[in-house]
Length: 286
Image (tube, rainbow, N blue to C red; front, side, top):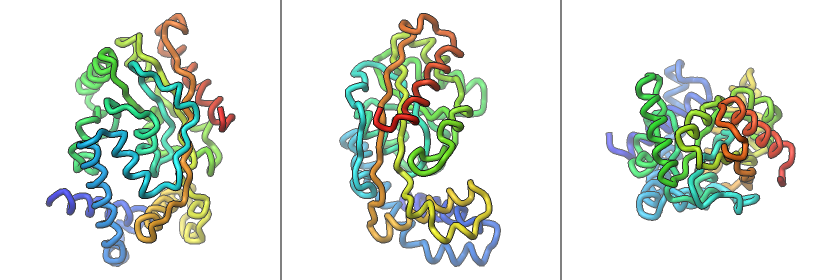
C-alpha cells in the first residue's frame, strides 16, 4: 500500500476500534463504509502536515494541523522554554496535544520519544524526529544514548512519561492522580546530559466538552471506552464538518536543573517534576 492507503486503513481501524466493533464483522464493515471518506480526508491532512514538517520544521508542521482543527492555541509562559538543551515532560490527554506541543515548544530540532507505531512509520519526515521506545533492553540502551547525545549537542526532546492517554485536566477529573503512573526515566537521560534543562509542560483543553458528554457515549460502559469514543466523535466532527471545537492551552513550567537540585538522584529529580506538574494542574494560569 502507498502512504495514502496505509494512513486511511489505520484511521479506519482506529475508528472501528473506538466503537468497539472490531470483532464484529458486519458492524465493522458498515462503519468502514460510512467512515471511508473522513478517514481519507484525515489521511490527506496528515500527509500535508508531514510535508510541511519536512519543508519547514516540526514546529510549522504542528501549526499546520492546529490551524485545521483548533480554534486557538494559548501558550502560558513561553518565555520559560530554554534556547539551549532541554527535555520536556508532558501529560498526554491525546487529540491535538502533540502538535500543540510542537508549536508551543517552537524548536525545529525537537525530537520526540515515542512508541513504534505503524501510523508514525507512515509519516517519513516526522519519523526522522522520533526516538523510538522498544521493549528489548539492548535497544532501550540505544534510546538512552540517542536522547542523551541529542541533549549534549544542545537539542530539545519531548517525552510522555505516563506512556498512555491521560485525563484532560480541563474536562475530566484525575489529572493529578494520573501523575502516579509517570515513570522516572528522565533521571536516566539527564544523568548523561546534566546541563540540559528538565521542562515540565501541561496540555489541557484538547477534548471538547460537547463530545465528552455526547449522548452516544451511553452505549459504552467503562470510563476508558467512553473517552475513546468521545475522541473518535470529536475527530469525525473536525474532519467532516470542519469544526474547531477547542482552545488548547499549553502551560510551560519552571525549568528544573540538576545543578540546582544538587543531585542527579533519579528519585529526587522525579519528585521535583511531579511537584511542578501538580502545581501547573492546580493553577491553570501558572
